[in-house]
Length: 393
Ligand SMILES: Cc1cc2nc3c(=O)[nH]c(=O)nc-3n(C[C@H](O)[C@H](O)[C@H](O)COP(=O)(O)OP(=O)(O)OC[C@H]3O[C@@H](n4cnc5c(N)ncnc54)[C@H](O)[C@@H]3O)c2cc1C
Image (cartoon, rainbow, N blue to C red; front, side, top):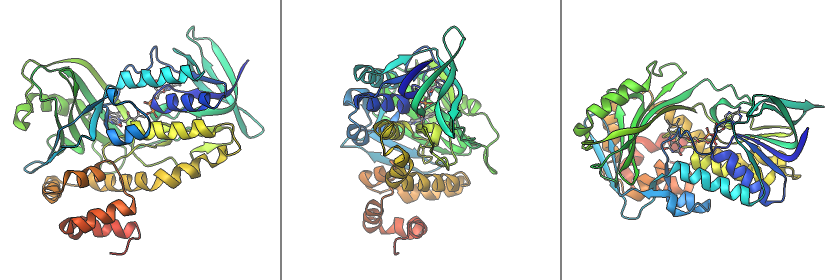
């Protein structure tokens, strides 16, 4: 049986970042990915933030900057011009393959068309994993530390998520689309219990999708595809020019939407990214969170601090994602009238302040600054949030 310091299951952003970090620290690393390629098929829209990506050393060339965000409720619209770009849409395949190149350059081995199927365990500790190789033969790998980065299926940690954001998306070639304009759309016509989006990502390409929530009382029972097709047929009503546009890719995917998994590790096993529920439920945003968690787990794997991975991660990111989940649960109950009121409340908010909320920055300093500068927001929505954050109103 082959043996490694670190075995990584899943070559999405979380696993690739973990492989890069662990290999950079001199660990022997094997990453296995069930698909035939890294970065494909794509199952994500790639919305992110330049400032966050830069702090993770992601080069700007993978990010298409957005100049204006339009947030549309059924009858109300709030518009946020980004004079200083921060919001962006990723070249997903390009970025993931870049992360793979960096992991390989640091010394990691990657195996494609290779899947994990279960854990090896001895004396209450995970000691590696079983799997299938490209010829569909059974294989097994021993590892001092195994990292589950298999995404929403959480194959090794087995987080048993029951609630998901369910997204359907077309990636279109669109010669007439405004490449600076991003749209978020809410309301029962476009996305009951979720939201729809228009994300241009450069070179006349645009990802248009609809995400709904499934799994909790009050969530939608519907598939997002009929809503997506209707959105495309009605795009002109929302100021989106799809003349001459045709889809080049279609995909649908899931993102866990019930908060961070109660356990992020077991002895010998760490979970990162969607496998541990480490995405912001606010707008179903997980890529940079996955990279950040993967980086931390890869740094700590096989070190004496490995067992501190969950506490270290929760100390810096846990509060943001817990609140994002809380807000998401509330938003999914809002009817059209309430969405109109909430978006009206955002009208006039400076872009920088809206951006702080959108990127799930719920640090007390950021929220106090927002509340101080926007008294009307404080009066309508923030008091309750502040109470949950134990800030004095
Ligand atoms: C429709 C949709 C739109 C989204 N839009 C955005 C967005 O705009 N911005 C954003 O930041 N996030 C978005 N997300 C969320 C984001 O895609 C995820 O949070 C992110 O991809 C999580 O990264 P990950 O590495 O944890 O998991 P994944 O990206 O899911 O990667 C997991 C990898 O593990 C592999 N794998 C699975 N099982 C096995 C196995 N048994 N053996 C080996 N390999 C395996 C998979 O093939 C995959 O490559 C979206 C999600 C969906 C579904």
